[in-house]
Amino acid sequence: MIGQGDEPVGLHVVVAESGLAAALERQLREWSQGCGITVEVWALPSEDVPAAIGEAVLAVVREALAGVASYSGSRVVSVAVTAGEADLRLTICDHGRGLTAPGAEARMRSAFAEVGGVLSVNGAPGEGTTVTGVVPLPA
Image (tube, rainbow, N blue to C red; front, top):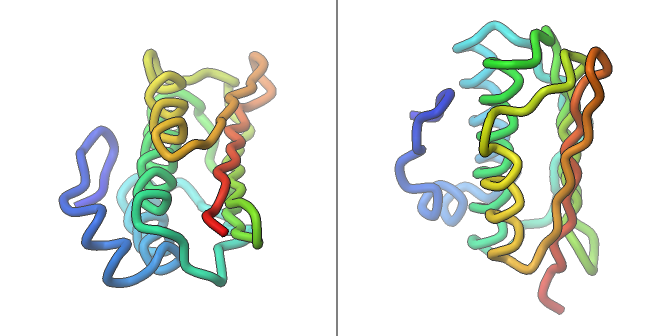
């Protein structure tokens, strides 16, 4: 199961079998139901992506959501993941305290770096936190 701080079982299988958009919908729905925080989904990819990239996206989303639940105090988190011809883009933002969990930023950056992407985490006390990332897609 997907939850705060839990390592999801078989991300590769989930992404390969259902595609990234379906895997994200499931992850976001289960997380929201588990913690009571509302998720606004701005966009999900209409095209599938390689499994390794999908796994990295799910890992970053899981880590960011854990931070929202544990540190932000926000009651709403917004998520957008889009895949174009050249790259996949991810944005996760909350309107909470502007904090990230210890080590979370490094783990998220590492997940995206493993698939050739870059990720940034920006927050200011009382202004919330925004996680943005870009991963190039194979031609």
